[in-house]
Length: 88
Image 1 (spheres, rainbow, N blue to C red):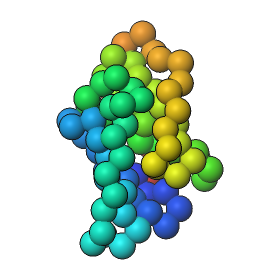
Image 2 (tube, one colour):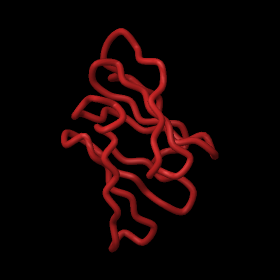
Image 3 (cartoon, rainbow, N blue to C red):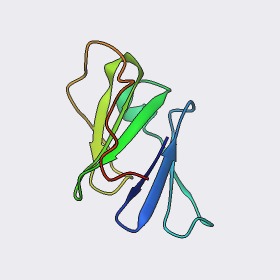
Image 4 (cartoon, one colour):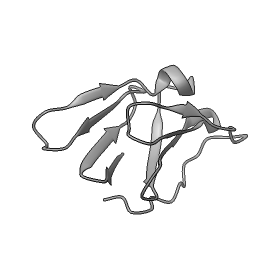
């Protein structure tokens, strides 16, 4: 999945890691799986101040910058239909 947030873009998927870039040439890897405990990221959402990542096993995690992640209360099942607010 991918999401534009601020002046950057984040992409993630089956590896449980995400990569962030502000110029599409240079990327920084952020290991969301270390916070989420899952290896599949299903969707991102951005509300202007907080980036949300959701995925398998109902995980939800948030970040103000795409690098520092905080685990949130999990859902009871996988989050397949997360609405991608303000994402490309």
